Length: 363
Image 1 (tube, rainbow, N blue to C red):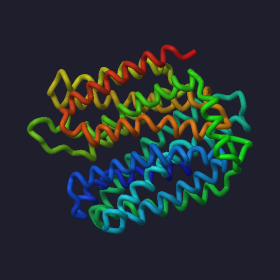
Image 2 (image 1 turned 180 degrees about the vertical axis):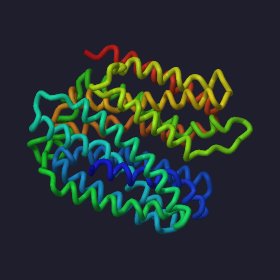
Image 3 (image 1 turned 60 degrees about the vertical axis):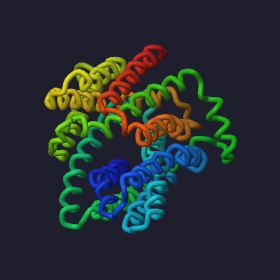
């Protein structure tokens, strides 16, 4: 519940963040810089936050996430460019904690209480729950933005974050490392990052880098050269439905669980289709297939992390994995806007094929 409240806060801001910046009078290059600052912050400062979760405790850093995200929401009530730049930087750190500290805490507690049982069902339910929360958050954001303006979804997110913090306060603490030295934990990350861990990291970066590229490009690909209007809210809801079905497919209770190799190949084919067809319906079907692959991917990559990452450096290693794909997103934001969306998706498709190779070499 605490994690889903956090993701709900994250989903609430998404649909109207760009429009909020436009409404405040910023130019496109300023808005690009604001988005870039978030990803750069996540790559640089998020790594230090991950180290702190292993030194100070995962529960404490989950609470830090709530505090940082509340600050991020409050800062978006201001109009100054530098205030919003700070908000984006804070958001980058908070997002890194959201997708590392919560999972690190949960895996550690599971291993203490239910050693020997599989985490697969938990991760599958988490993926399905996140997709449902995304749809609800999108609808709520649309309603409150209509009545309260583009900053209203940020205000709605704050009570969710407070409730998340209340739930987290009831958790027991777990710390990855017995050492309280930041330097020793950083050194342990380097020592425990063997070839298998690097392969898991490569698999994650290749898929999630491609996924973030897709997030920026699916709208222009569906609009086409005629720049036709799209029911973005309905399309987004359809994507999340496909993600939920993918999470269900990855559940141990499913009759057929596609391996990550199969998921990567299907995702690669889906992202390559816009290069061969201009039909909006074929492209939409391909993008729905990709979102289904996203739903299959998240439970399985989380299971790989729980299997191969060391407990004492789990949080730091997870944030380390996020550095390369944040760099990929920054590169696309800064230099990819002049490139045809279809070509960028084709490059993402090639990256996913490399992911097939990386997965095939795992023991």
